Image 1 (tube, protein in one colour):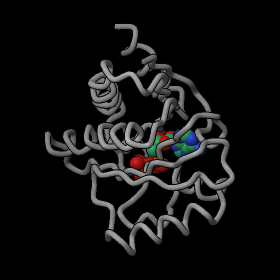
Image 2 (spheres, protein in one colour):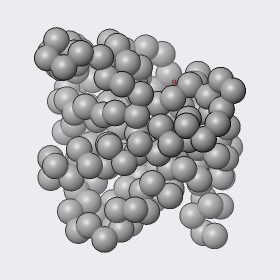
Image 3 (cartoon, rainbow, N blue to C red):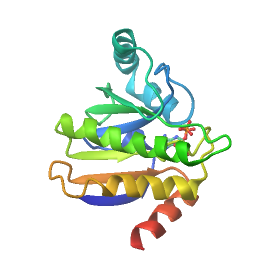
Length: 170
Ligand code: ADP
């Protein structure tokens, strides 16, 4: 499994699954969530609504999978990151769960290439350095599996791009 860091818009990349930093309603929002629904089209929202009708809201740290609509990816894996607020260990555990549950869902669906945004580091205000460390550690727990070949950390801003690049060469 290769880990790669790139700086781009996650809606443009051609992988089996892109991960969305959603909220518990799964009805769309701002930031990366808004971009994915806008560019992916109404099919994604329709499927999110079906998921919610079946299982209720998506809890923080959990993940669900839908079509990627008009995006180049095949699937969108929606996960709900924690809001940092006062921070703490519990928040860090929940952020790790986002990456772990998204990877598990990807494995269950035969995904070979997957791209993650920097979950919770936008409106949810997680400190970027801590979030990057958690993300990398969580993904590294999957090194022994052989289904997923490439994991992309898709950074939107230069600060995250540099943090991930530096932490991965450590
Ligand atoms: P959260 O609510 O989980 O903090 P945000 O969407 O506000 O979610 O931000 C999460 C991260 O996604 C931030 O680092 C933000 O810069 C980044 N981001 C925003 N739009 C895009 C996009 N189109 N592609 C990739 N990353 C994006």
